[in-house]
Length: 179
Image 1 (cartoon, rainbow, N blue to C red):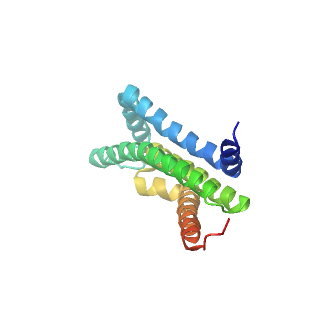
Image 2: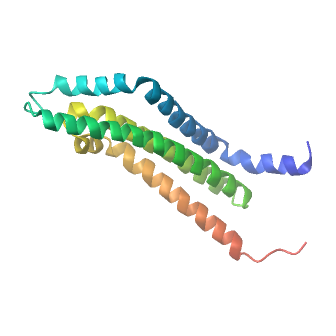
Image 3: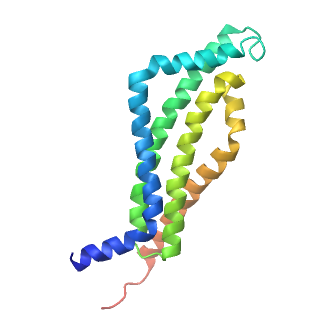
């Protein structure tokens, strides 16, 4: 193994857990796409059955409200798929970037973990909200019940993205060292 390769692997090591979470996030999105493609009707049926359980108590027999929540729930599930793909890919790219710009091991680890865990958590939030909404009577209730997951995961992702930008800008304005 040449020195450049060893140096690159050494630089990526602090980001390894965050990178693993980011790749898991991408896989989650891909698996959702496969499951949706193969089982859309079954998933929609599950949403309908979930709403039917509380048709009288939560929806008070309002079929239009049930249909609206079911459609929005399906949209949330598709949103989980899209968020997982984009946030997972972003987490990989930014984790590699911060690994290579010369930030401290601790900063690299923290940023990569924030990106990987934040992307995965936020993607899971949308999926879970989609499944919960029909039974709870609306997407607002589902989102509110999962605030504990949505806020920290999205916050971690945004903070880590901001930290990656600051790290890159610091590199750009830092005077070049003489060799």
